[in-house]
Picture 1 (cartoon, one colour):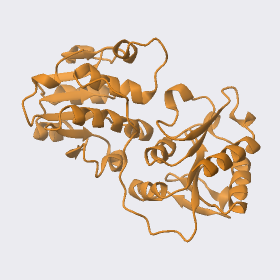
Picture 2 (picture 1 turned 90 degrees about the vertical axis):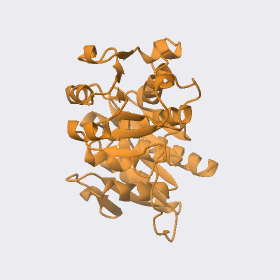
Picture 3 (picture 1 turned 60 degrees about the horizontal axis):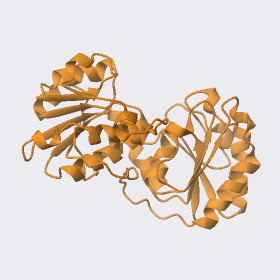
Picture 4 (picture 1 turned 30 degrees about the horizontal axis):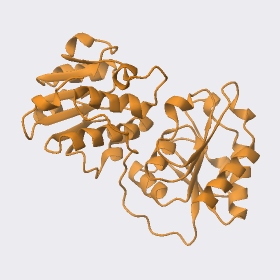
Amino acid sequence: MENALERLASGSRVAVIRLRSLGDCVLTTPALAILKQGRPDLQVSVVVEDRFAAVFEENPDIQAILPPTVKSLARWRPDLCVNLHGGTRSMLLTAGSAARMRAGFAHFRGAGIYNLRIPTAQEILGVKRKVHTAEHLASAMFFLGAAVQTIPRAKLFASRRKPQSSPYAVIHAVASSPDKTWAPEKFLVVARHLRDQGLESFFIAGPGEDLSAFKEFQCLIGAPLSETKSLLQSASLFVGNDSGPAHMAAAFGVPVVVLYGSSDPVVWAPWQVESRIFTAPDSISRIEASQVMEAADELRVRR
């Protein structure tokens, strides 16, 4: 392990680069909590694209949210820059930060720009198994000198939504690719079942995504991320494909039922929350609506 954190003067500035995506941003928050717990005096910023900046808003572990430009990093003047993204753009941002200490995983492209090269999470954690994304990101903080500990649940903060007249579920029925997307008609069966059980459903989707199949229910399309956070925070249940909103719901402690096709639940499972997972790598269509309804009912009873 490195002693980088010990080498930082009191009140030093740290920039953490986390450009995308939504799920990755959410799962970065446990690492930030570990960093801040280890050195509460540090001033921590997150470098992130505007569309995901709301993930980090109001988080007490973060003192600044910066746009992904060399100019913004130069103004922040970090003593330590930690690249958790690994792409070409984040590499250039790290180089342009002019930080005295520059950290990135050793397998990242352009590893020569890092004077703190982070080994694999397996090496840091002393395991040989596949690791979860939250473990991978948190391991960087352990390497830099934070105390090795149980990795906490992700953190999100949102304004309280005006109370609904009845409890509700949030359903995310879209995904980034067809092999990760459960059939709309099966989501409808689940939503109708929940309604029969006294739980209304909100269907959510990003800008330009189609929710016309679910018009008998309330739909929220292309809402600001801050509004989606508020909706999820007060939900009684989340049901959906493997996606960023699933990790958002988990961060609020909402019980989740998540369906996996080609993505790996070992790496992308909901982190530190009551959940039920169904996976069918060969075809997500093999997951039956009856399985999801049973899981949703079980989670509601437990809650």
